[in-house]
Length: 122
Image 1: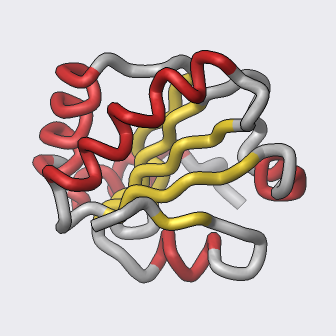
Image 2: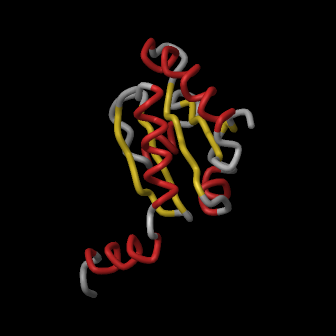
């Protein structure tokens, strides 16, 4: 599966409508972003069950601001609509593969329980 371009119009729908979504925040002028692109593309071919999506931080400044992007590339992983990983910097292929394995193995009931426990009491 090829990578999907995310925009303000389809970001939420993509993240909440798929089991696992990996998002690469990038910009065309960013050397490390361009270096990471083939790794991300190869991962999308190896994992058709995972949505590999890209956000051009120049074109989609609203998404970048909402996601609190401070440096690029930044990789985010969502599982069942929940942000479970966010880290700036390009990942080598083995690290990206390991990340996907860990995200797929998460017990989402446990993750939601932990999030609920961390939420401030109203």
